Length: 508
Ligand code: NAD
Image 1 (cartoon, rainbow, N blue to C red):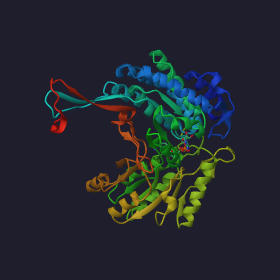
Image 2 (image 1 turned 90 degrees about the horizontal axis):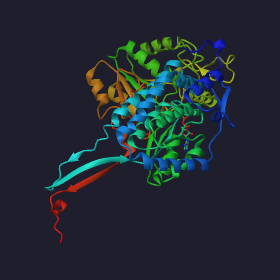
Image 3 (image 1 turned 30 degrees about the vertical axis):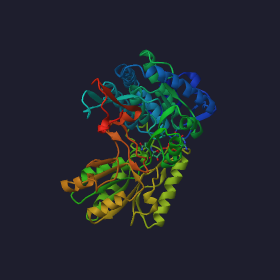
Image 4 (image 1 turned 120 degrees about the horizontal axis):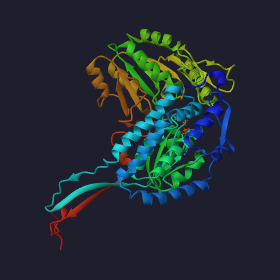
């Protein structure tokens, strides 16, 4: 339970939560202020790392790797088991910090921490299932098999809007895979990072893991450069904008390092004439307006059959006008603040461009609560009807704008759907099985995530998460995403006492 607004002191709440998670006072003083999007005010401060300090961290992680790679997988799993227990114990502390730093409402902040707990469970099971295959050899008296070994140091770069879950998706799997992790969180997610790291530190120490298994590097993109350039960082997993990915990928590729990119989305839902509109309404409203439109999987485009468009848009308009906007700690609030002024200005610029392209704003777009929070940016989520999918619709504006377009036949809807640079998440609302199957088929959605009768956001950790095209092509979290944190060796063992060569080759 969050205290009533009048009794609330965000600095105090966050300081208590940080202390409960085990963050030292020492870590909470420095030259860089930490502001909260809830009020726009500074709540605490931290000290950024220098590039030399980051290099030193890579040395320590590399040393830890030499020890950790020899610990058996199931024993490595004990660390994530304990981390998951500590995250459960401190769920509300960590959620308080997520709410303050990212501006998420209580249930979404707690939901994000729950994803961390879930991936710890998943990774614990995976620690006993780092399987390789045994293949039939073409030669008698030979065994052909593959083994999976720890890869090396993993660098994780994360975005402001999911300050903790994507770190845990990477780190829980990397740790069971045998890899130390160095985390460069968003500039506006450092308190979340310090708290998460403190809990992992406790788990690692209690399980006797080597010093240097996990690190947090505080700073902006400069602090991330050594991770991109140093040969010893075997994998860089980076979550953020497509612009960031375009800079990160060539630097890591230039040294033949591995990278896993989770970049911007421009997610759409197709609503067909047979859709259950009550269900669609709920799925669309949460995916488009939830988290104030600041999820990578936020629904930004709605492609609706012309026969149901007016009805659906009218229902959405009415639903949007009931959304409670405000301090994310207040009970009943569903839409918190944008992260900062720049985000607000991008939203206004996109709305202006959409108007110039012939769009009509059906509802929303206005700043609210400016008297109460002059330095914070709360907005009404917007719905804009567009005559076509113009350039502004094809871009990701990281704010709550839902562009609505109409279609006549499903092929046209799928073309519109796929005609954007990004390829993260997608959905179709329909009661027609053939339409659903077509949408999920090779000629349907080109995204990494394609859903039926559910919105574009709110993925579960059991599936692989990620997307195609400008979204970067990476997959993390569930399914077989663990493999990217390991290296595969193919082994041939000859127990025949002879030396037959493969493919029937004869030699000496
Ligand atoms: P951002 O790209 O500004 O920053 C993300 C992280 O990358 C930060 O830690 C930042 O310091 C770092 N960074 C930025 N440029 C860098 C560079 N050139 N070299 C090294 N590091 C660099 O993104 P943001 O504003 O924090 O987050 C919003 C964006 O992230 C949106 O585009 C959103 O769609 C995307 N996102 C994607 C996913 C996903 O899983 N696909 C998840 C969350 C957010």
